[in-house]
Structures are given as structure tokens and as C-alpha cells.
Length: 213
Image (cartoon, rainbow, N blue to C red; front, side, top):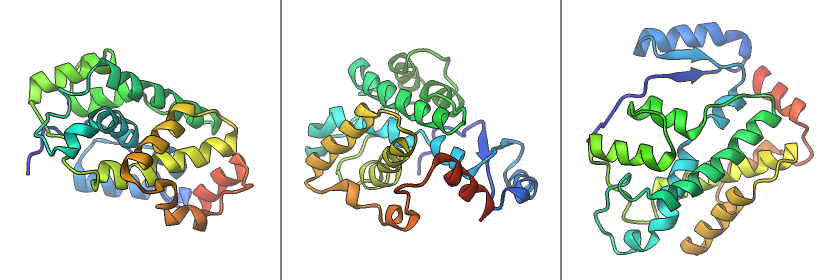
């Protein structure tokens, strides 16, 4: 297993929220002083940049994936691919703000994860490739970048966007395009959404639910 880097900072939330200090102490005892408190577990979900980053890496490289090429992930996060990531990320941040949360950008996340200077996403990808060389991108669409990050990441964000009335055209288009590429409805691949019963729930009610149970 190749581990390129260790992330410098993680947020921790708890349910119930009253036990946050206990959860924070446990994480620090196990893994060191790299954890900070987060007000609500919903905020930690919206802090997850992986679905945004991975859709920007997968969508422009579908033919490489189909041909099972060995392609360095960040070397192929070219300016046009990076713009997809930045556009979807702006929508993720807008959804978070509508819920009252401030979440770090994809640039800040990449800086903390890969220890390269803040810049445009494309410039940061160049710096990561120069520093680490890898990892390689997926060679099948039956990969967590698609089968996990789309239904359990982007589709969940899309549902949250509807709750707060935030337009997310790039995010929704990315889901639809990858679903078409996969030949399956990725919006139906998250069984948790039905159980969460988000239809008609207000932002305030969802925030309260994510703090008290």
C-alpha cells in the first residue's frame, strides 16, 4: 500500500453533540493533536471534498479508465478538469453556507492533505504530481470514486441543496453524466436517502436532528 501523505487536520463531530469533548479527546488520544471540534455532524458531511475531487478526476478521463491505462491521477487533473472540480466545489460551499456552516474549499483541503502551496486547483495538481508522482487513477468505473462518492457524496449534496434551495447545476450535471457513463442510475444507489426521509424537512430541523440523536 502506498501512502503519499498524512492529512494535517480533521474535524470531529458527535451525536449527541453534548459528547463532542469526549469524542475529541478519544480521537486525540488515539491519533494525536490533529483534530478540531466541529459543531454538527452535518457539517462534517459537507466538509467531505472527496466526491468533488474525484468527479473532476474521473469525468475527463473516462476513456483512460475504459482502456485500463496507468494514468497518474494528478498529472491528468488538467486545467479543464480542475475547473469542473472548482465549479462543483463552489456549489458544495454554497450549500454549506445555506445551512450556516463554513467549510474549507477544495484548495484548502488539498493544501492540508498534500502540503503544497495554495493556488488554483490545476496549479496545485501540478505541484502534487511533481512532489509525489502518484497515485494512479482508477482503471474501472466499479471504483469507490464512482460507486461511493457519487451516490453517497454528490447525490446526498444534491438532496441537501434542494432543502435549502441552492442551485447546484454543475453538481447535478456531474451526477447525470457519470450515471450515463456507468449505464446505471446512481441517484438510486444510496438506500440511506429514503431512510433519512429528507423530503419536506427544513434546514433547521435537519441540523437539530444531526445534533441530538
